[in-house]
Image 1 (spheres, one colour):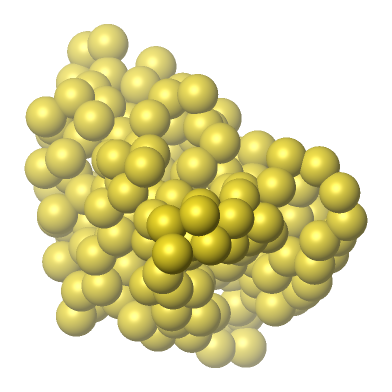
Image 2 (tube, rainbow, N blue to C red; image 1 turned 180 degrees about the vertical axis):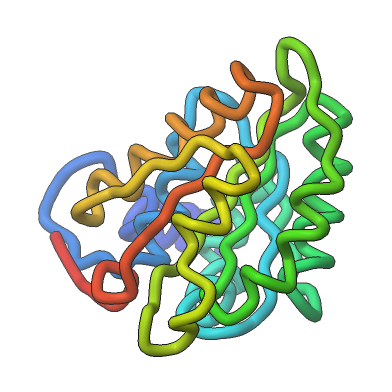
Amino acid sequence: MADASQRHLRDHALAAADGRRLYTAGDAILKGVLESEIPIARLVAPPRPPFASMLRRAAQEAVAALLERHACEVLSVVDASRAVTLAARVSAGGRAAVVPIANDQLFYAMPAVQAIPSRDGGAGGLVLICEDNPELAPAAPPRVLLAAAGLPCLEPHDLESLRDAVETAVRASRVVGRPAAIVADVALLRSLDT
């Protein structure tokens, strides 16, 4: 039975290093977490679109085993503000954390983001992956909110650059001693790629 489980884990799309596999944006984020040269200790998110499917994927047996092997804990919490608070504690302890935030939750999470003290030399690194959905929250564009908070932002253009942006943002956060953000358009977050 263990051999079948190991084979299933090895054959899972998120464990693949090559070959043609179909990925969602949630898969790209999870791959970014798994492939980061800087270990990411925690992924914290509310179970809200467009990131709810990523949390469901992370709970699948094979994916959960991959995340456990990489010492990454995935937490589903009630709202983005709580997610930021929990991830900030992990980062302050010297480990990296990632928080996906839906556009309609970002405004409410900003007080928690702004309450994170700046650290010289950075801590473990804290990444906010922010949905940019002008139809859902036209009064709260992520670029404006994040720029007002003085956070560096990356804007990926495809799923591969979204995956790569996870590690880049962790590195940026460590350098500036503040959270770093990835702003992803809603169309990108709903796309598929190989």
